[in-house]
Image (cartoon, rainbow, N blue to C red; front, side, top):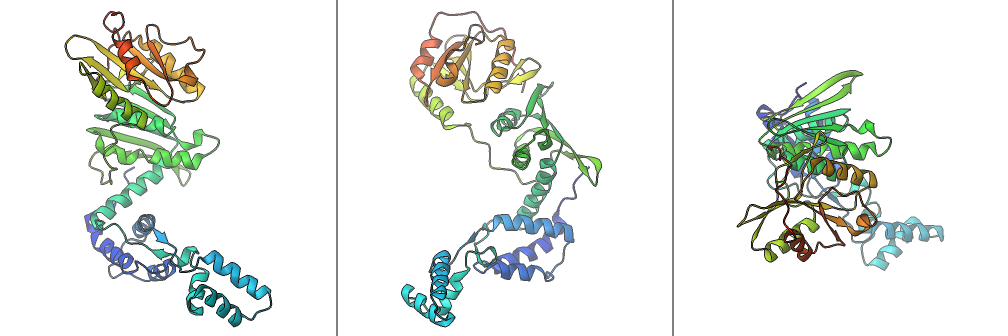
Length: 377
């Protein structure tokens, strides 16, 4: 199935919709809601208009505008009325206490209700073209979030997809392809709880796809009790996310910075090629390559994951039979373990990876060249 995207011929009515939203910046939300029930100067298809309004509502932040905090105003007025004062007398007394006019106090009374909150300005660069792309993205994310299974074939930057999926806690299996990788992800109904949170995390993969050189996403879902398959490919008009961050955590960024300063004879490669192991792909965190001799190490940071995740990771690392492997392991996870991959040099850490310990491991007794064969990315 190909989604019914917003395209260039939708730009006129999107411009009219944007004009309505911008005309209501600083006004209560209920005023905009009333206006949206009326026709636009240029009308668009109702289903597309509904999706665009959903996106604009998410982009347009709201604020409480009140000189007296609404909760305080309500509490004081209700107490005064309970004490026997008339409505007018209570308003005058509480307004005088806060040094405002009674009418201003009345405006503050319910200023924190959703319909009374004031609308903030939309992003200055938001135009009909960008709004169309954002609306298309929201449509695709909604379908992917409700899917039963998602398969992504990606070449170039596939590593970012795999690592992002795992960081978001998605149930993901990565397999090597002749060019790139295939990711198979379970949909939210594979879980028994937190399915909505999982669905949003699944949908958050979509805007990262345009950063791949080539990709195809297939998502199986049901609509009107009939099976459907969503297909997304390069060229689909989707709004991309910002360029993926170079590091997944402050721990990795700090280690890369400290290692670069302390090891002038070594190059640190942030995105080494994946390694085939146990029918899947392992994406090491770093590759350490010596500048003057043929020596290449892979370094993996094992943080605070669940026990089941750690057992799976170690099993795959053992299957890869990497002879030049350094494992930096959270100290709580390192205690009492003996199932490390053969030949791996294990460095426990707490909050910070000690670069001196890594250099000591690199400069220890030499071992033969690695036998694991990296896969192409």
